[in-house]
Length: 412
Image (cartoon, rainbow, N blue to C red; front, side, top):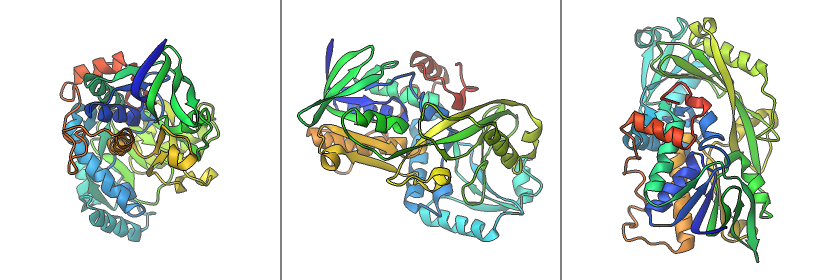
């Protein structure tokens, strides 16, 4: 069976669902396909941190500014898909006080709200915080529930006319005379499209290869550890250069501890090393000591879709967390094909907007509601079900979007 669509989006994580929503809101006929349940790749296996931008303020000021802007947008449009907990960047005795000062200054320069408090004041807010904490920088970090976020974004795309197919793996892209014209999709059939968007994240190079395109994707695994712990209401970040075990993300009666960063060859097949779990637990316990005495419920690994012409191996943290929009007509001489890769869950909507702008331009889309000052509406219009947790959890079930990052939240 053959299906016709304006744009085929491959990859049903946050970014792919976001692209489908954005284009559908512009009146474009969109088909979204995902090989598993929605969010079953990187999005649903993250630590679920809603970044304020503070983590990147000193190393990537532009990325930090993007994070704080998108952080506020998600608070406005995503409702119960996020939790505005706030966050602490914690200085312990072994941490460089000059680094702390530089972090605070960089946050202010990037427009990230920040307040400094001493350890005693911080422990009044979070009694479980280490007695060794000397001071903290308070920033507007939060928590993302990616299962809800991805499901709500896909449902919103569908409300605007998009077709959404889960458990529909692309066998290969279809290429005709130097142009991608669609894909052969398991369970769906032949899908013919004027443009194809590759939003498959860590698997982007594998999909691109079926069209003869080479990509420099470096899948990078990170271990997350879920511990039964009731009482933390604030995201904790260790105030030092990014390292293993420097994030604690609170849920209702659990915390997610993260993470590691090691480049792997295959995003589907890689070692899940127990030593990573032990290291993350030990490092996070320096900020929140009681987690060392609580039960580890489970551990899971996510794979980041990092993009770089250079491989960094064990030093994978050196690869940029920024996102890239690759037009394969200009880059590789293969028309009708765009890849969006890299980035962070917090900036998924921004990535989708940039991709949708590009594709709309390629297709000559100029919907009357679009103006130079307001190129899309996704930053202003709330997601479907955003204010109804039960409805969100129904969507999670419908799209088979329940994933490890927030398995303890909602009715999965």
